Length: 428
Image (cartoon, rainbow, N blue to C red; front, side):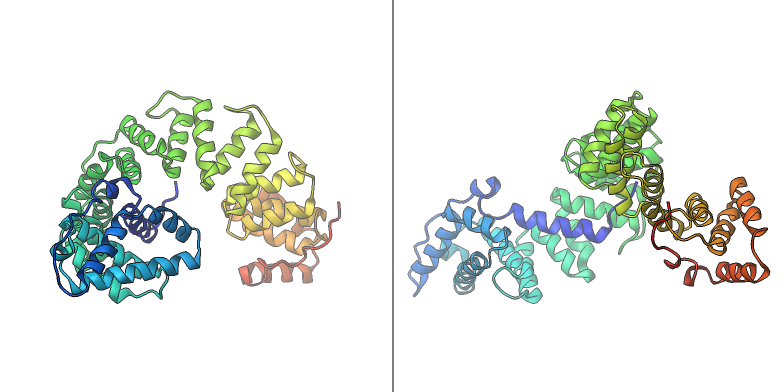
């Protein structure tokens, strides 16, 4: 199954950490009752009022919801409010203002997030790092992870600090770092150690990665399909699309779980609806065959097209075949040629053979024996008997000049052969 990139994962963690610490989140609300300060410094009562509003005002929920929806006015208002809080923290101590250390580190973290995301103000990485560091030095794990993402030179130090506090997002990042050898010596056993820490806290991506290690028998773990399926299921039930697709494959093949086409289709559909290309293709195939679901050509075409549009060459070939045969969608030689070409230009021999056939017959595009020969020449390199026969058949029909032209196309490869040359009006 395809995996997301490390960059994507880390960006997701940062966003999740920032969102989790915002007012309106239950974990925030539990600590959102500041003790009243009694300082008498000039401006202190106003500063305290700002902080009390910041911590208690229910309007924060509605304001933040509007910010997330892209409301620029709400973002500007939020920034003005946060700027007042920032000024208060700059002038007075937390003790003077009357907030607890835990509240202070969360406020500092949120200020960092405001500048990092550019909420109501231009993005300011330096200011974001300043407030993240303040929060991190006070021991706030989400800030430690955010700071690790901003500063590569001490990324490991801050990630380790957050992970050792039990912060699941940091634990999985640390596991990935060890798994890839990113800023640390590669160590699969340490990767598994941190994946398990995060997985046992219910972190879905860690559960999926732990399942992958059991499937492969890596990181000091024995190869165990049952354990792999167990961890995939935990992640799948939380909506992890790759785990859902992997679990579908487990049920389809009966590895680690009792074989069940119905359960395979169930999990494939869950993943397919989230855009998982493998699941879309496999679900389309199940509808085409009536395996685990009622046979339905239209649904087969629907899901196969979804995968084809994401670039899956097997789906592109299958969708082309559906167009050629008019199965589940209107018959169209031109559309068939288009989708065969998509897969053929990426080296898929069955699509190269099929596209050559269309050129030979003049189906969906003008008849062109030179291009037919060229595609057959590529397809026969896999040793396919049908491609070899087609190549020899068309070779006999070409003039000496045409044969020389066809051989040049094959030699030139993608610069000429992979163009849209010859694709035009249908001749069906």
